[in-house]
Image (tube, rainbow, N blue to C red; front, side, top):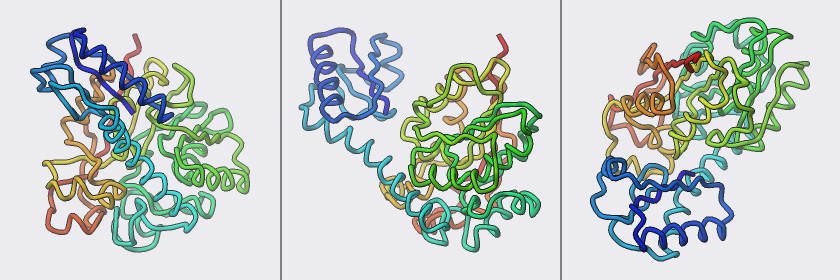
Amino acid sequence: MKIEILGTGCPKCRKLTELVTETVNEMAIAAEIVKVDRINDIMNYGVMITPALVVDGKVVVAGKLPSKDEIRKWLDQGEDKKRIVREGYARVAKESGSCCCGPSSSCCGGGSAKDISKKIGYSDKDLSVVPEGANLGLGCGNPLALASLKAGETVLDLGSGAGLDCFLAADRVGNGGRVIGVDMTPEMIQKATENAKKSGYKNVELRLGDIEKLPVEDNSIDVIISNCVINLSPDKESVFKEAFRVLKPGGRVLLSDIVLLKELPQAVKQSPDAYVGCVSGAILKDEYLRLMKIAGFAEVKVVEETAAGIEHMTDTLDDNAGLITSAKISGVKPAK
């Protein structure tokens, strides 16, 4: 979670910093607290009166000093989103099926995990070589289709699930390469670890952790992939900054994700089912690209864009077709 305190150093601004820090410590949550004191930066949030508090990119209060109970409520809301996603994916790991933690008609449409995966870009060959149980029908594309992985490279998968993309990447980088999968759901890490062990993958390592605070060393990764996961993060800016941190200079990122073409109706934005279904957490395509550039990525572009395979991601979108799309997005960490 990212918490920003907007203010130019007034007594109320200092008091807000104190209250937020105390509340974060009392709640024992993982949060990055950032002070924003430059007037131009403050105005970028549309804030004219300080102090103001921003939680995961959303201004929750401006112009007054909130109580600790109010601060706790706003921080709880951010934690609730992660809890809902974690619980949803834990169910999928245990039940071994169903896309984006929703019902069978969600995320990528109905059908078996194999049918869903073929619809979003995986070949029969891809699906035949991975361990049984690695393909849960999750995702909104195939990030490896454009990755051009080379033997010996180190690959990081953000939100690795049961390991489908990790195992496909491991085959491509070979024994001299390495694949790291990071997922915040213990049940998914356990399932992927079991899959790796039973199929003898020695070059795959699964790590429990948040993609907003990666358990990965600086400048250690050649290629980052991710499939329909970043939209689930309430703090996408931190995700991109962390991705940039761990990539080697000249490293590249290839993402399949859900982005918005237009703003969603308020009812959809507030729907927990739509959040877990990879919809209401998504942001506008231009904003997604802008956050990648802010993190430092160059050559940021949409490589491919399609609505195929995501027509029925969640029942809440039945009357809102044309608002979302599945995009393959790439970027590079400059060599210098």
